[in-house]
Image 1: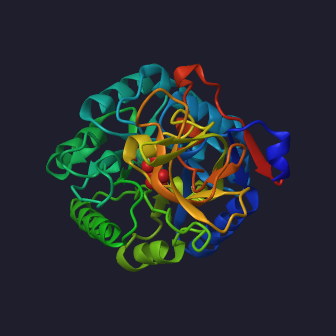
Image 2 (image 1 turned 180 degrees about the vertical axis):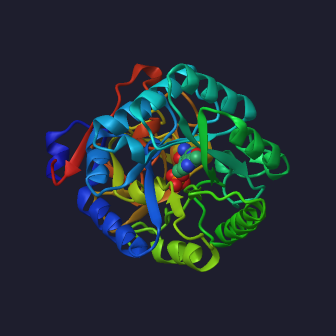
Length: 379
Ligand code: LLP
């Protein structure tokens, strides 16, 4: 609680020990396997978080020129950066080429031609992987499902042969792999097993044509436990990596890349807010707090549910509150009918599991300042 006295609310609080422990586990599970983890910067691009992750030797998965710059500035090796993104701008492609990034994950035939042209102009060869849309339903929220035929991402398997042939015919691109990403906050292993099956079949198919890929990128998407953050502070990495160890058959010398975001940083962050007012309206109690949807948009955008704790109240009596922010939108609501100990003006609340897609999606809507961040231990 002493950090609350030193910092104005709302702010993001990061448990850096938990982040480290999470990375320890990941590194332990992949040791001895040709697996490489590329941290998906979009989940959280706070410089201190980036440094803590790059220090452990992870690569980076980026989706914009800004993320390329941030990754390099905060210690990721350019050759360990993979650049995804469905509509890369010319300047972003050029920046990737100049920086010598490891791989462009290509999403369309036109993008392939543009990369080839720009690489040719710069006298370079671009390492590329083709993003395949495997048409697998990840059984997650529709806004974060990416691998079905209805999504804008990737190349359908039916169109893959001509795309592979085209990539191999171009002078300034080097086809090094296939890339997949089926969605986010995936909590069952079944979609990943289906993904492994698809990858295995494609590898066989291309091998029979004499085509080998040095790398396979299976994307990210491993979910975290939003309902019990203290019981499960670390994502189920053992299950997850075992799924790939069991079901994927990488070829000799083939690297398997993972692009995890949420599972790495989600649990270690909380949004800390102060209760401004308790308001009763037609029998409903609202706890109005100083954090809003601009600070953490997940509940408003996806209907996401985060555990909320009152860090101040020791009251044994529990009451039901709608926990809402100050922004002028009805969707600026963190929870409805949420049970909290009797809550009063001035109490401090923690909105848990907000380390991923919290700070990175914050905005200045309503001209509110961006929330600051606090780290324990301090960097
Ligand atoms: N790779 C690609 C190509 C992606 O599109 C994503 C996430 C990832 C990797 C990392 O996925 P993760 O391991 O974090 O699930 N804002 C949403 C999540 C959007 C995910 C977008 N893509 C949320 O707050 O739930």
